Structures are given as structure tokens and as C-alpha cells.
Image (cartoon, rainbow, N blue to C red):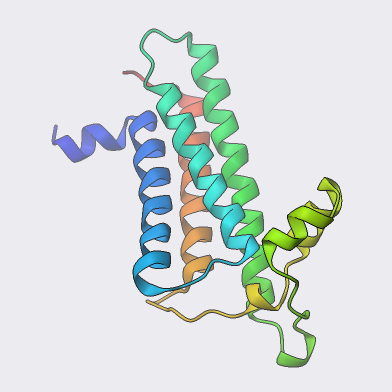
Length: 166
């Protein structure tokens, strides 16, 4: 069995590598390409980061099978939540120009002035910054993120129901 096939059947490695790779890739696009992330992009990065943490926890040897399934379930929930956020961003990007919400103040200002629940609501509603995209390779950032979230969701559910061996 090839090394790629062995890695593909290790949910710990897939969750860790995909999550970490996408967070690092997005950060490099921000630094090198000068693409500033909108609040929804930042939430998607957090979701990928927590999925990577789930993969890291799954690397711990001799965990009980129930704990493995719980961690995979948490990774599935994170994938589902991240996919919903990416879906919201894609929805905003495909709105007609006259229906796009106005741009919100910078994230630092929102964090300093709004209570936590209003901050989350404001971020999840999105703003005009979330509706624009500057980069496209077949898909834009949000569409690629949605694709990876769906893939990770299905992948983790598969291993929840079938189990996995180290």
C-alpha cells in the first residue's frame, strides 16, 4: 500500500494536514498577495484551525475508540459550521450590487465596542467586504473553503460510522 493511501486512511493525519495547510495557505495569501480577510474569512480560518487541533488530538496513541469518535464528531461539527459560514459568504458574493450590505467598521473597532453576542451576529451577517473577492482559480476563496469543508464533513462522518485503525 502506498504512503498516500496509508495517509488517506488516517483521519488524524488528514484533519491535521488539511486544516493546517489551509490556514497556512490563507495566511500566505494574506502576506504575499495582500488579500485582506473579511470577518467571515477569519471565522473559516478558525474552523480549519480547530479541525487541525482535532487531528492533532487524534494522533495521541491509545485513545479509547469512543474518544476517537467524539473527536471526529467535533471535527464534523466544525466542518459543518465552517461550511455554513462559507455558504453565507458565497451567498453574499452572488447578491446583486444593489442588495449587498454596507461595509462594517474594522474588526478591531467592533471587538472593542460591541458585546460578544452582537459581535458574533454582526460577523455572521456579513458586510460589503465579505461580498467582494479579488482572487479566482476556478473558484474563489470561499468556494474552495466550502469544498474542503464538505469533503472533511463527509470524510469524518465516514470514519465515525466505520471506525478506523491506527
